[in-house]
Length: 270
Image 1 (spheres, rainbow, N blue to C red):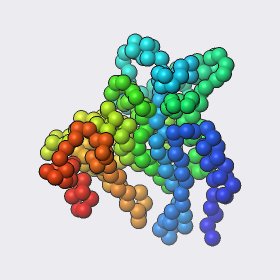
Image 2: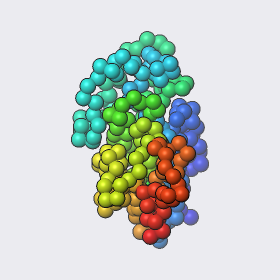
Image 3: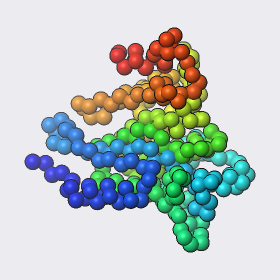
Image 4: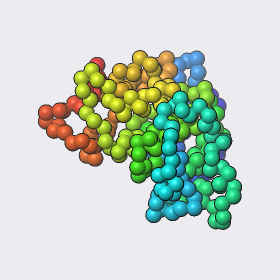
């Protein structure tokens, strides 16, 4: 019988995560592998809604952001190349957190999104369960709500992706798109034949740098936001973009004349 993670350690990690993380969903799973390995593990992350602009001195009335300060910012990084100097341990607000007046809200507030220290606790809990899982899937909504500029959304996705990669440098990581990974929420232009979607190109530039989407999938991903990847010798992962089918999708389209937006069903059948 293969050695499995003890229920006690898994339960403890899940409890710690539940107590400290409101918007982050974390699951650990076991999977059968080929005969060369009896068991594998994977993490399922979803909806952690990272807010790199979180300010603990503000409340939910401004979504815990200093909008006056943000409106004065220039040069917000968008693409991964701009993030080379960023690290999970040297964020500008580390100094503010240590010097802010009591009470401290460094782990977030009700009706606000997840600040960086909250993500650190989630990633630390994951590492305590398994520092080298077989793979990780992230099923959407990496970015905070109510971000007023596309550059801010890109920053949240870029930094969130970087933090996961720094914590699991050798693990294959596979993302899929959530409504808060679009800008604005749920907005994704219907693709034009043989022309990539501008926002999906932006996501590709981020996720292909930090995550494990095969380079061969660039055309499908930048066209429709879907891809396929081999995660083991006997397991294939299909990542679908279900934003197209949401009742909140914008711009609206006629499903009678466009029954298969982005050709995703045809691709899946093939």
